[in-house]
Length: 325
Length: 161
Image: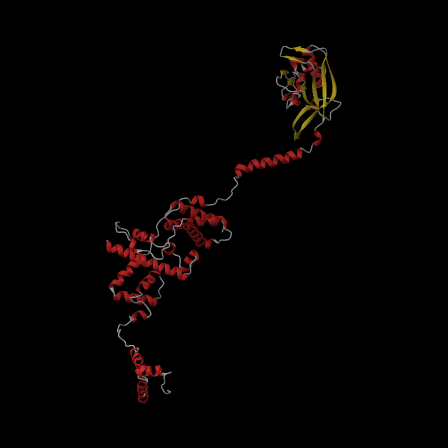
């Protein structure tokens, strides 16, 4: 240590009071103060800076130990109920509880803090569920299959494109010099002509099966009906002259007209078939009409260019309308 | 997740989800809305969510929906700690679970949620963290704080009784 002077005296003063100086150094400090009296008060100030232990309190050392103790017991109690403790910690916690009856009560209260699930029910679960998009086969499959089959069938038969439009091949029966006819069966007017539609392919020979339909032209056409079985049995049916009230400009026609031509051999109207000279239905029809009207009639084959048929065929079924063009 | 698995998830978890949300917000209609909204989202995401993972996904979705709702309604409690001074003494208590649930309602929302997930659904800290977006340590801290509050709450009630 160097010699004391006014630049380093603080270090010497502090060491003097802390007892770090030798006897010679202490004497040197005393001599320095005597020759520098202005530093005397400061010398004593350093003496007061020495701290003395006046607080004799002690720290709770147990809190520094590892493991459960009174200060951290709650964390260990919670860890106990949460299952967070190791087996060693559980043993230590149990020992702590055993050592203090109040701790046991605390642990018991912590155990009571575990919530018991309540039975809440969500009532609208059905709305949350998702259903598969099930197509009700019985509801839709049969109609769908039928529709598909129908259209396949339809498309196959609609290949007869040349069926329509085409002119009507008819046999025209004209009554001569007669406008009004009165019969005992019914009253009707026949002021124009009776048309017998023929199958398109038939041009020369008129047979029963070649006649597609018979119709009387407007304004008050007469539709001649006959029983379907006549064609099959060959027997002469009663002819029924029926006045049709509601007809348009279109030619009245019956769906099963092929069967209705045979009525021209009506026994009552024409007599028995044996009395007839011909089995030609058109001729029979003419004879029948002549008999009913008591007037002569004539028959000619014509093609009505002013009429067109439109429609389609499905198999043997025909859907068509003839219309004036 | 198939449609059948989705429907199975409805059967298995809808009640639990409903209970979890209901215990948090105590509003039946809003709880139903949240549950329906949650399952709607799950149905939309069914191709991305495995059946084995659907329950935590469901709770996560519902929890976040609930938090959004609470924030919108500004009902979320900002309390850091529950206040034991709010303990009422006017009721007669006979059922510990009633007392506990009353205490539960005084917890901050986040503490209530983690305790419900822990006790009702049996989730561990990690799973609760995934659902609530908290770290595992945060979950543990919240559960410990909640336990201390609940313990003191029922302790005080027992003293009063």
